[in-house]
View: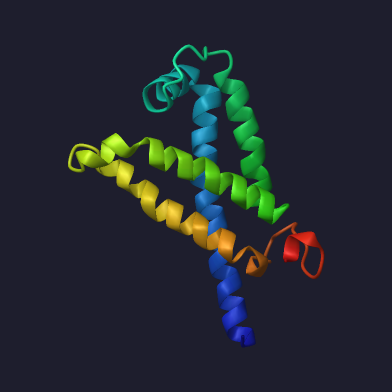
Length: 142
């Protein structure tokens, strides 16, 4: 690749990582700050009623820590993969919302987000700006 193309790709991947991480962090904070909403989401979409509001903030804190690592580009294969799997599961369990698109239009934002996360995962080794991931060699750069 040319230097100019590599630079533009790296900037694009950074913007993708930051914008996707922002959305994921808002969802993590929602679990921490509004556990009743998080419990309702787990009950209605995942069939996990009875998790209890005391467990939801713990899940939110764990999610926030993962998202911070994602935002920092740390252990890209693992963190990008984990965020991709987390969002992919959320997107798929919401399948009933897609059956009534005009009533659930905001749910469709999950699909371009999923595409962005897949793209970021596939190009994770070119995502080098403001990234704590290894830059040359090493396991994370394969």
